[in-house]
Image (cartoon, rainbow over all chains, first blue to last red; front, side, top):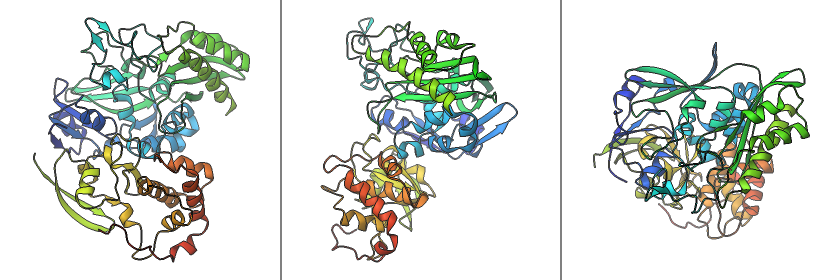
Length: 323
Length: 169
């Protein structure tokens, strides 16, 4: 690990004052589960690490007029167990609970989950975010078992965020703060699919800190279903988060978002549309799953993910109306 | 590298150490003689380096030592009360819940975290709590049985004598 200076700001103002206009100068440290891995591999070698863990304003979950306000430093463990989250935002609690070790849930934060870098083994192995060699990606003809089945490149990594799909389904926004001011960005636009190797996969700028997430208060039934190879210490192969606005027993409007299948959470309006005005049954849930993967374009080794994504949608829908 | 002063309570003893910003908690604890904190995968996957920070199980390989400023850290060395083993340690002995022993400190500390907040867990809750620690030799059945037994009979375990010392610190 390269040496660096360690800043311990007590306020957001002090913290953003430690950031820089370009990536590479400073990195924000919260739980550290991703940043330390990146620094160990020399994928990130910041000159300054800005520890935000002492900023009290970034903690806590509370109800506001705009909905549920979740501080960036809320841990996955707190999120999964929060009575407020469990009561109205089940998709989010289930996404957090899915992270499979108490140790990681105790350390990992909401902000860190959204800002973590992809787990793509080409990226982690030093081949760059898009794994380009001689002007073309190594992924389509390489080891692509865990890569994207949507999006069509040139980015083939999958978004590693566990909360992203649930937050997109629930219509959440993130607040990004820099020394120049604050802006709110819908989570759906926070994740970006880079077209070149110099673009980040999130809309965060190098001089900004993600300070909170706001999830609107609309009454919806929601759920997240994740498919993993193992129940312990594993990343999901495919996930689905669904949020349903109901009209009695029929679906008024739906939001269906897949995870770990594309460089960003993958919203499927076709699947959502297929449910409008219908009850959620085995048959309609299965049809929604089919609609969600109709445009999937798997690579040489990951056609299995199409089936998993389809089933994840079906099971998430059935779980959402069950509870 | 620039150094900084770390004030931390380890196993009930206040400590003052000089550390570098990039020093990992795992490395600092081992440097200071807490060899029960095991260096495994160093990627937050195996859980052998598990310690409790302010009562919560964390991977010390994924944490800068600077992060525990002012915190209370518990390592396996701090679990026994003098000659009395912790009930979980006693149950691990009774059940032969270790083979090579490398993952055992992490397992016992993960169990300690669980039983502190949930003294009467179900088997599923025990398995969930231990999911962050990998064993590569004996498996998980004996450790899970040991934790369930420790939860059932705390009074008996509390008086059990420590076995002859292995590595003392």
